[in-house]
Length: 97
Image 1 (cartoon, rainbow, N blue to C red):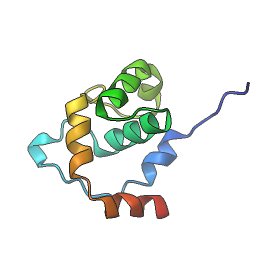
Image 2: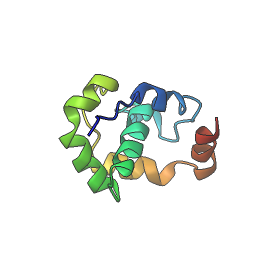
Image 3: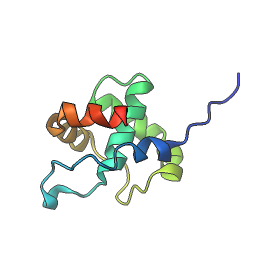
């Protein structure tokens, strides 16, 4: 089976216009890193923040090649908090651009 080559940077570029709903003191991880990890995790079958986090930890080496990850893989709580506060309309609009 041929390996699928994914340009993760191109995924992240679609979310550059997404405004970060987090308070500035709670921005340890880059918004685009969290969003790309969440999308990739869900596409790989993860069903929630805990599963996304587990998937990301198992793919840390691969993700490190494509994302900045200045503080490593975000925790499941970090993923959950961001996914809860993202505006669905704004998130959806990023897919349309």
